[in-house]
Length: 267
Image 1 (cartoon, rainbow, N blue to C red):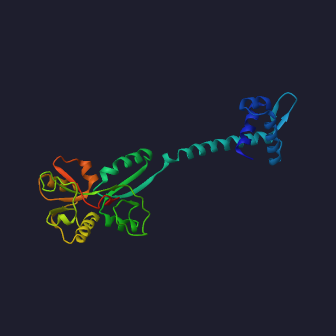
Image 2: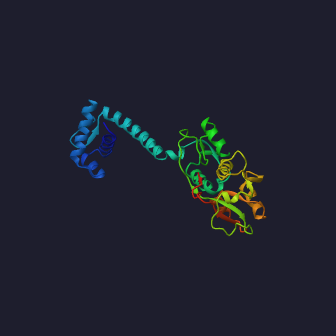
Image 3: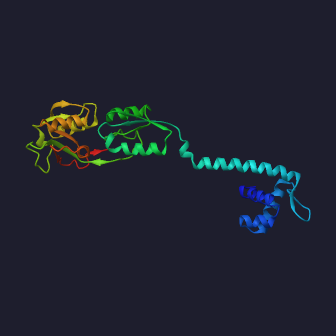
């Protein structure tokens, strides 16, 4: 027995004729007859009787008719619900995002996700890179976005974006017209920096250490707009991803590529 056989049976029962039913559903009359015969053999009952003028349901056929209608109605409801399953998705996603690029890369996809799954609630928390990895590892959050380096073999990772690391300075800074700088050349700079718990800060320290010095850091803060606003006032220099500066477009700030940092920021 299958769904098609039940449909054929109901059409024949409603039409009280194999020929009329066959025309309505565009199948051969012989196919209908064969299907009904196999159905009767499978059920071991007689579904129709013929009095010489019309085709009628037997008592068993009438009972089977009602059962078939109920079953097919339930099946249609199930099938339509299955097609719309995304509309019935409920739940909560706890998401960790870095403050640095939350608005740049995640506002649009989050909005699109909410339109597609309106019944899913998203909780966003901002944390620095190392904190994000630790919180994901203990299942405090569902998804985390952080920059490299990543704890090896601890997570399933998908790369989102790569961006060069650049030196941001005021347009009047002596280095503002340079096409490229190296970390070695920045030994005497007065730096602004992100906070110590950020991966960017740790990466910056590692790069300057490799260049042979400890950087002179005069101010630390977690917020990029604050750091860049201070630079726009003519104070200090900041190493950060180029995509962050380009997104905000400060008129009085210049960015200089740092040698060997073409893919220094990997998210």
